[in-house]
Structures are given as C-alpha cells and as structure tokens.
Amino acid sequence: MPDRQAGVGGQGQRIVVVGASLAGIRTAEALRSAGYAGRLTIIGEEPHSPYDRPPLTKGFLTSADGHNTFPALTRAQPDVHWLLEKRAEQLDLDSRRVLLHTGESIPFDGLVIATGSAARTLTSAGRPDSRPPTANGVHLVRTLDDAIALREALRRGPRRVAVVGAGFIGTEVAASVRSLGLAVTLIGPDEAPLARAVGTQVADHVARLHRTNGVDLRMGVPVEELETVCGTVAAVRLADGVAIDADLVVLGLGTTPCTDWLSGSGLLLQDGVRADRWLRALWNDGTPVSGVVAAGDVVRWPHRLYDDSLVRVEHWSNAALQAPIAARTLLNELAGRSHAPADACAIVPTFWSDQYDSKLLSVGLPHLGTTQTLLDGDAPSGRLVVGFGRGMQMVGAVAVDQPGPLATWKRHITRGGPWPPAIQRPEDTRRDHAATQ
Ligand SMILES: Cc1cc2nc3c(=O)[nH]c(=O)nc-3n(C[C@H](O)[C@H](O)[C@H](O)COP(=O)(O)OP(=O)(O)OC[C@H]3O[C@@H](n4cnc5c(N)ncnc54)[C@H](O)[C@@H]3O)c2cc1C
Image (tube, rainbow, N blue to C red; front, side, top):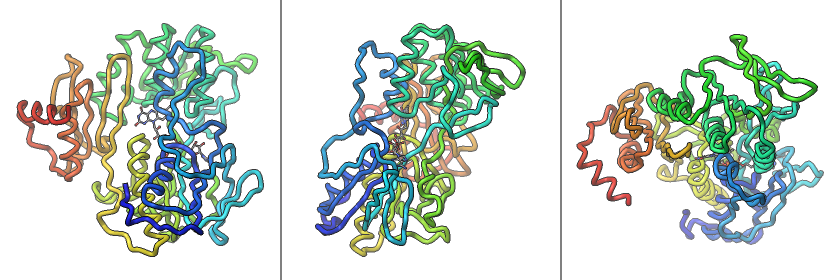
C-alpha cells in the first residue's frame, strides 16, 4: 500500500476509475488508504456490484444452491461515487473527460484505466471473433451473467458438453462439468491442455488428470466450425473432419483487452494499453500521459525483472498487486512528484487453478521460459514442481499438489536468480515449506 505521506489531500480533485472490478476497486481502495480525499468515481458497465471471477468456473458452476449468490469483491467501501451499468464509450484527453453511452461526460484530473479483458468467441466458420455467440447452446464464461446462464444450461442436463479451448478457463470448466456427472469433450489445438501456460511436463499431468476423470480429450486439432441445426449448436467440427456431437458448447478461447473505448484517444494501444514501468499510459509517440494510469488485465508494460519484456498478465494476483502501484503513481503525478525506480511495477505474479482434487500453483511467468526442468517430485506420484528458465535467468515455476517449495522459488525469481538453479537439498525445501505454514 502507498504510505499516507504519498497522498494528495486535494478536496477539489477528481479521479475517475473506469472498470468496476478487481483492479479498479483495489486501486480506489489504495487511493483512499493513501489519503486521497478528493472526488472518486468508479464507472462500470456491468449491472452487478463488483464480484470476484475465479469462482465462476469452479464452485459457482457446481454449487447445489439455487440462488444466484456471488462472491462480492468490495472489501472496505471507499467513499466512492458509483456509476454502474454505464459504459465508457470514448476518452477525450484534450478536455480530460470520459464520455459514457448515456451521453454523460465525466471530467477528471486523474484517470485509472481498469477495463480488463473480454472473452474471445468464434464465428460459426471457426474464425476468432469478438462478438457474442449467436447460436443457442454456445456459452462463454467471463462475467457473472455468463456463468449464471451456463449454470442454468448445465442444470437442464445436456447430453454432451464440448469445451473448445484447453487453457485455464476450458480445463476448469471441463473439470466442473465432469464433477456434475455430465459427458464432456475437451478440445484444444496443442498437444496437451495448458501446455502454453505451464509447459509440457505439467500439461501431461493435466491431460492424465482429465482422462482419469472421464473427459474425452481431443488435442492437437484446431476447430473448423460449429455446426448448428435451426440456430442451435449440434456439433463441433474439427479441422481433420471429425464432428464432435454436442448440444452445449463452452468457448474458452482466451481474451481480448477491452480498449475499444480508447481508440482515437491518442493512447498507444498494442494488445492492451501500453504503459511505462510505473503503469503510466503512453501516448502514441511513447511518452507518458500525465495523470493517466492503467492496471490489471488491460495493461501491457515493460517488466523490469524480465529484461523489460512487454507483458500483459491475466492473473488475479497481478491485478490486485498492480492496484497500489497504479494508485501511488497517480498520486505522485497529481502532486507533481517524480517516480522512484523502486516504485516501478515488477510484480512476480502467482496463479492457482483447482481441477478435481488437484491444485496447480504457478509463480512468475513460466510462458516466458525457453527451457524447463523438474525441480521436485515426479510425474507418477502426481506431485511435482517444474521450473522454467530463459537464458541464465529463472522466470517461473509451476507446482502440482506441492505448494510448499513455491515460496522458495518465488524468492529466487524475485531476486532475478540464476538458471538453472542449484537443485535444493530436500531439507532446504522442507525448511522453506515450514516457514510458509
Ligand atoms: C471465469 C474466470 C476465472 C478465473 N480464475 C482465475 C484463477 O483461478 N486464478 C487467477 O489468478 N485468475 C483467475 N482469473 C483471472 C482474474 O479474474 C482476472 O485477472 C481479473 O479479474 C482481472 O481484473 P481486472 O479488474 O483487470 O479486469 P476484469 O475483472 O475483466 O474487470 C474489468 C471490468 O471493466 C468493465 N469494462 C470493460 N470495458 C468497459 C467500458 N468501456 N466501460 C465501463 N466498464 C467497462 C468490465 O465489464 C469489467 O467489469 C479468472 C478469470 C475468469 C474470467
């Protein structure tokens, strides 16, 4: 959290946060914690109070209770002016205003861009799309409304569910659907589920986990088209001509950052809002825009720990940890203070995924790795830790049902530790594990 000294008390100042989810809410909380006493407005297009997304592919889908209760996100209620069910349509940086779909125009001195990302879809001809699916029986899982619709469709007892996309969303949905006792086919273009995110060793384990639990895995073949009959999905046709019979299809095809509303604003948009090390949004010419920061799934920034590689990270912990950094940067901007190198955003994110009785935990950015090695455990036992390196540096680690050693590897990665690391003696691992209990 920024210290209170860093705050600006300016009663007359106006900060506007666009995006009423994790990054937006946590930034608002951090602004108040830092002593910001001016006007704080949060704009969000969804109709619900802010909620947490991770349960939507997990317990929310399988829970027996019929209520649409959902995991609320707001911890403390910072003194906020809420503008929910309002979509930001345009950003005017000359007049420093956000224009809403209602025609309202909201002025600001400081702006937080926290509009996250939206689920990618597929046209019936199998091409990536950003529009909502039109065929009946085709579902996404990004928002609470998506998850409510999918849960209701699952309760109606589909004959066979096909999950297209075997990343985190796809694999978690497949596991949840299986645990409801329904027939599931999981389809992905890579050799094994999650291979891009966690590497082949862990991905092989994930494939075994799904097969053991009765999922029909169709990996290594892209989807050609969704077949429909009278507007309702009937099958998923693969590029090799095989048609997978399905009366319910869930698309887990990754995301696109929500930056439509920023086009024409002069901001540099490159697979997200391009920002500098302090999360300040950049103009098209690469210089920082005064008083405009971005946080969460939407921001792409140079990560100091990874040779200033540009990264956009779609993990819960990344959004939560960027929030206080964005708040500090914004308050420094508004107060005309300079930005210290130590305040740069160099988060080592963590990610978890629950599938059946198994827990996957990841630290750092394994996908940046060019080599991987088993650091602990073994594949047959189903408890393993795999490390990832790039050049001489360790960049990430993934553990399956073995969370203890990850604390050690997180410290190693945070220090920019060497790759390959000296393999730990088991007693070191046990000591580090005990320290995290
Ligand atoms: C189903 C699901 C499960 C997940 N599970 C995990 C997990 O197990 N572990 C993990 O680490 N991470 C998980 N994640 C990722 C994590 O939830 C995200 O990284 C996190 O939500 C990012 O927060 P954010 O605030 O940046 O973006 P978002 O949560 O996407 O919020 C952005 C908000 O901005 C709003 N918005 C967009 N455009 C506009 C506009 N023009 N005007 C107004 N409002 C707008 C959106 O409607 C949305 O409410 C999961 C994500 C999903 C979808």
